[in-house]
Length: 470
Figure 1 (cartoon, rainbow, N blue to C red):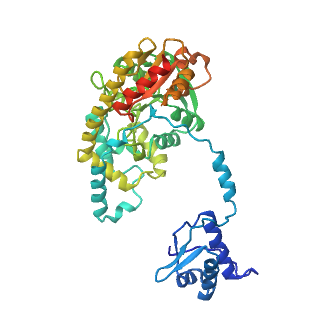
Figure 2: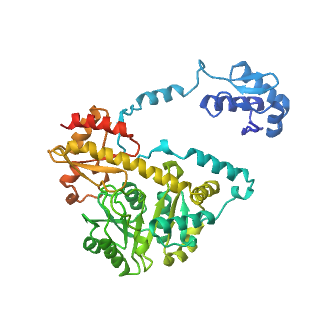
Figure 3: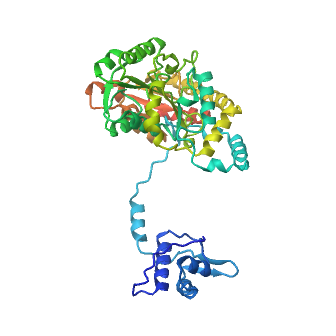
């Protein structure tokens, strides 16, 4: 540590050395200066605080005598470990720690938001990081384009066109740290008070975020093809939030016919737009991949959101927005006032990951892994045919089990927990207070995510669930 900021009051009756001593002592007691932290030398401290070196020496001497710091010959002053010393306030922290409830531990956790981190491409990530930092390019540590690095936007545009059929120029793409930020950005552009149609159940975080930003959420009914257009029309909404490639959490894949109807609805008014959340479109197990809804849009109505969090790792926090041309002027007026929330280093890293073929290879690997786990889970669930019905198994990384034997969602979760298995209820994703949504499917359905559960664990967990639910 080179500097130690202390607020000194020369007019105080308390000597300057004691003010310094008291400040450092409080910092050590509160944890602001942790064990082993090196303090500035008395010469540097005196120069920084503009006091005499004698004043700094006296403050350090008092701290040494009380055991808060120690002087190591030829090295300097270091903070001591405070074990055994009384520190005001620590007893309160200990009491709070004791009150904190212990989280139940499970042997198997079928989290629907899980990702297989054992397959993270560490080697490629280290190589790309090293190459970027060794380039000695000082510009990457300056504030970049609010819209995101142009190189990354070009890479994303190429990938989306090839893999998802999205028609986008780099100038239409905005990079941000997660879908949450991009939804916030959209709301800042479009303004609050928008009437936004959402399905129920849906992605709860998006519902909470959009609602908290003073938008009116209109709940729209679904059928086996996804959002019903007649219900959407009756809702009076101007914006529809949908996940056509794999609706979360029901797993519905919206067919082409319904997609065309949705686009026709949007084209009827200049105020209407569709937010297409394409969060895990990379993982599909039956039939040919259906291109993104945006690829069918000819009237500039679809706002496309994608992310690398599900396909690479949640902590990557790199998502992207594809704005239709009709919204670009609005973005230039309002959106560009907000700086990009992803570091330029991370953006260039993702660009290299895409351009050098690492991402495609990683996706192929993850598809094979998830497909294998998907097949094992469905194979194990065959023994549950008399107990529950499977749905949502054609895409994504989770399935739904709806009980046919009268077992409620809460009972199923509790029984599974006793066997050390964690499953999740569908009811947490229902929105609004409309009792028509409180169907038997809601109260009798659980979700099993398999992305972070290995095949042997799936088989073992299935045995536990068989005992729990039989």
